[in-house]
Amino acid sequence: MLCPRVGAPRRQFIIVLNALILFVFLYHLPHTIGPFSPQIYSIIPKSPLQQFYEEPEKSGLITKEIQSHLLSQARKLSSVEFPRHIYQTWKTEKLPEANYDRQKSWFNNNPSHEYTLFTDITALQYVTKNFNTTDPYIVHLYKNFPQRILAADLLRYLIAYTSGGLYVDLDTICTAPVDQWMPRSIGHQQNIKMEDINLVVGLELDALNTTKYPDKWIAKNKFSKRIQFLQWSIYAKPGHEVLRRMISSIQETAHKDISDIVWRRKDVSSLRYNQIKILDTTGPFRWTKVIMGYINQIEGREVGLLEYSGIKEAKKIGDVLFLPVNRWSPGVNHSDAGGVETSFLVHYYGATWKKNLS
Ligand SMILES: *[C@@H]1O[C@H](CO)[C@@H](O)[C@H](O)[C@H]1NC(C)=O
Ligand SMILES: *[C@@H]1O[C@H](CO)[C@@H](O)[C@H](O)[C@H]1NC(C)=O
Ligand SMILES: *[C@@H]1O[C@H](CO)[C@@H](O)[C@H](O)[C@H]1NC(C)=O
Image 1: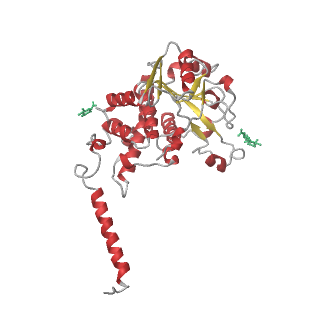
Image 2: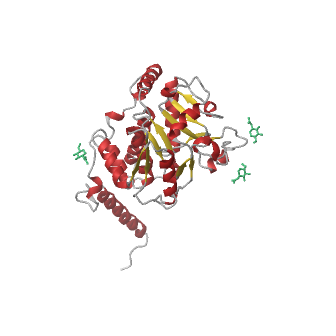
Image 3: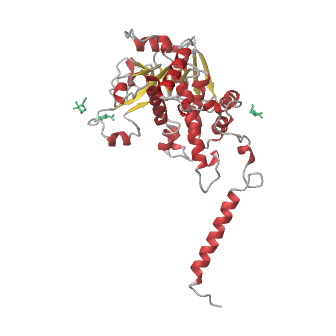
């Protein structure tokens, strides 16, 4: 009756191995006969990466050709006006209490602008209507990202790309009418023509001084580069290349990460990112990289961080107007940001998303 003791570890190993094989097998059964909710998989796109989003830099063009392509795109956009429309997003029409007054500051300062608050329901209708035929994979990701911060980030780029105008987070107040932003930014710089600007981008961080801001400080404060652009406010003409690239790059990253998933279904519903990966996929890290990559190409040269640093009024590079830190991010304890007096908007760091990552 006594089992030989030496056999036990091996038997246990075989049992565990069998369980593991069964688990993997069950996990990869088609969902129609598996225990998984079918509606999550109702939009499975045939071809996830659509032609629509193909990157020109990947189609074998040389630097000069890419540059002239981008310049001609920018020239075409210069005949378009910035839409006078402000977009914000929240889960429902019912806002967190503090945000009603903030929302009102946008109405009061901009009576001639249209205003849209997208809720979860109307945002999904908007995304579906605008992307279902050209790029169902974007709709699929938007609908099913389990960490909704990814969807909320993606949504702002989809809005700015499709409709243009101003996207701005709900936890902000308007401190200067939007119509004054560009004239006041350009100020006395006669070399800048307003119609040549197609996108306005705000600096969040200007910290090139390594004595004042050691690497430790950069890491601790969760910045990527020493120059970082913010994405709680995006002011754009519709169809801008930077936004097309941002959307395309989110799509490609998600698609790759999904196909790299092991031990779980290779589906967006299994996708989990940590904080840094979120910042680097849909957040300001990625936004900064995409913008700098675009600027290098439209300028046809490597534009160093130094050229974005120490901006006093505003600076036009390519067809993008860069605003100093103070305009959209006043009062922070770095980057020589001034107070609220010279700002266009104030951002209250809501950051509820960090608490809801799972
Ligand atoms: C999205 O497009 C697919 C096929 O192109 C179509 O079958 C489906 O009804 C569309 N969905 C919506 C909500 O428009
Ligand atoms: C960098 O910061 C240090 C400390 O604040 C300061 O003494 C130094 O002058 C700064 N360097 C430059 C080039 O601004
Ligand atoms: C702001 O930064 C300075 C030095 O970098 C530090 O001494 C000060 O405590 C900071 N203030 C706040 C409110 O964080």
